[in-house]
Amino acid sequence: MSTQPPKITKKGFAPIAFFSEVIGELRKVTWPSRQEATRLTIMVLALSIIIGIFLGLFDMVFSRFFSILSNT
Image (cartoon, rainbow, N blue to C red; front, side, top):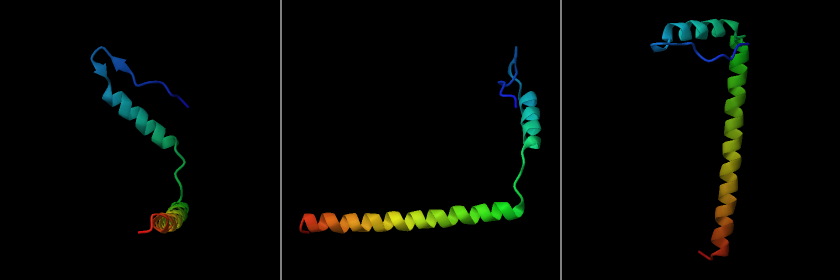
């Protein structure tokens, strides 16, 4: 795996060389199957919803706690 910086010519950055290297690196990527991508997407959405509910409940408890403390 090469992490060399893009080639710079006397004119500056060489966009054609850069994009050909990008395409070469993208060909090396092991892309997930459609089934795996769907499963991981569902997992991320479910976890996001669970964390959102948890944070919402946590906020509600603290709001009530502090409203009781301030007697409002």
